[in-house]
Length: 142
Image (cartoon, rainbow, N blue to C red; front, side):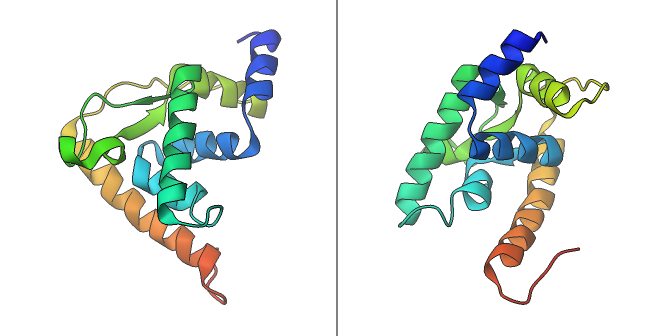
């Protein structure tokens, strides 16, 4: 990735956008609701406002090509945009690698259904712990 493209992405991405990319790098897969809980919960007056802001942000990041949703949706059509499962796109991975000076490259492919189910369940526990760390006085994660 050349420095001009890195600079363009740096200009287009805000602090929360980079936090979302970092979360996707760390957790591998997160659904829309998990991302909302991690990055939008305390920044908006209502849950509906947080959901709308989350959906707008994820669409914008998808349009930039730094994240992508899996082909398979969870929960069926009725769950709407909350049924999307997100992962870093190769451009997002290259951007984070360039920004953080990492040399190792990961390949991002469509995972199998069992892997997705397992990963989302584990990540739901991790998101709950992160929420408790953020919201409960006296609760800390080491």
